[in-house]
Length: 324
Image (cartoon, rainbow, N blue to C red):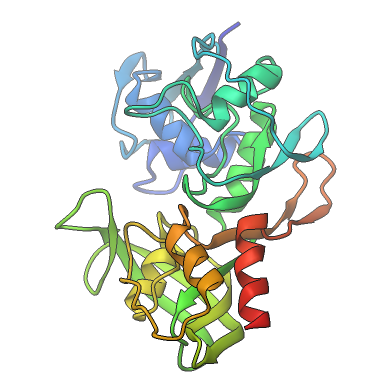
């Protein structure tokens, strides 16, 4: 059944927005979802439909917000074996391989993590993300591997989304980059916006975009006459912008091995170890892995930390570098 929320405005602050007011009164609804409901014409103030989330309210206003029933999924199930690290009645933690996108989009509506989740259990996914993104609280890129958390119900989705929004989620990535960063550890804080030259890419800007913060530390530098200079780096995110680590590394002049968008051309070294060269050239993904994911469980209210090993193809490169 549809859920209806009715609120009478009392003692409200001057010039308060309706989306902010509802968010303050309904802790189980994120402001993002409230905004979407308003844009979808689900809000009435004094019996008049309102589609502006920034609409100012006054004492005595009668607010009605309708939350529609979840849409039935029409996506096809995808018979893909998910590597499930943890599961209970509220969440699933998955170790995503590279080469698969998170949810349906242009050109790919069938072979995604969402389709695999529907195949696994279509009746246990939150509906907040919409028909194409059931259960999806956050994303990692197609050619990035590692840990993601899936919401199995709307309450868990809202709780996890709030943690992502407040930047309290622990997210640690390992990556292999060209060259070595100076200083060897630090904090990158910039604005990131969509590229003016290529709409599929992001870029650092001095004047517009969203704040992005990446903390990094160099774990190991590989540098000798038989290898190009490469560095194994750990990044801990304070924010989660699109392509954030890839953009920040490129901004510093040290793109990630295998990155097809923010790439650096491989320079052949005369005496390079053949096995290393073969693996660096043939890698069909970026060397970027979401190694650690931590959050407060939405129901149990306790911290949960998950870790994953580097996939075999990435571990192989590190092993060759360490033995070269």
